[in-house]
Image (cartoon, rainbow, N blue to C red; front, side):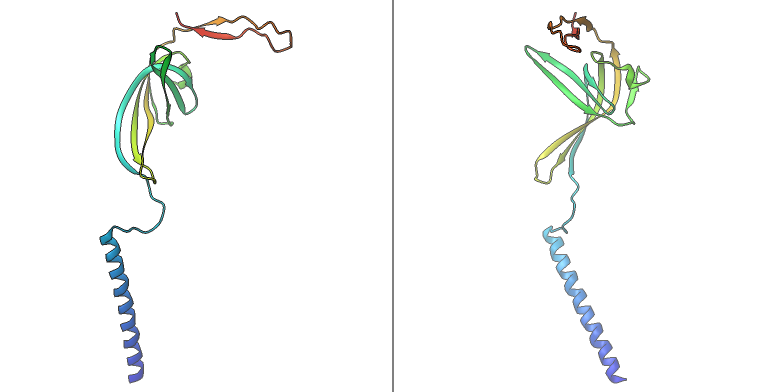
Length: 161
């Protein structure tokens, strides 16, 4: 009986010693800021609400491209993703927005820190508001004069008035 009690006491002592060592190592790592390895979520540096107004150059199922600034020989264009929760104003469906239309877009720009420590901005449209229809009208372009079937057909191009 004494031998059994001694073995139980020895095992309990060893167990407590191991637990104490593990906890001291954990406390030291926490004090030094060391974290366990694993997938790290990008740290959000800032979120900012922004808006732009411009001409639609392309619209798809979940993205819209808008030219918001034009200068001599240059354009500023932004491609904004959106999801099914995007708010539509002055139109009931995205199919009513066409290339050339003017829209006002409210979006959220989130700046995150990447794994490498650099900052990266990601934008997402929250609301798309139809402003006015496009002023560009299709004009028939001259064919290239080729006689091959399917080639040389008149193409529609757009010009501003």
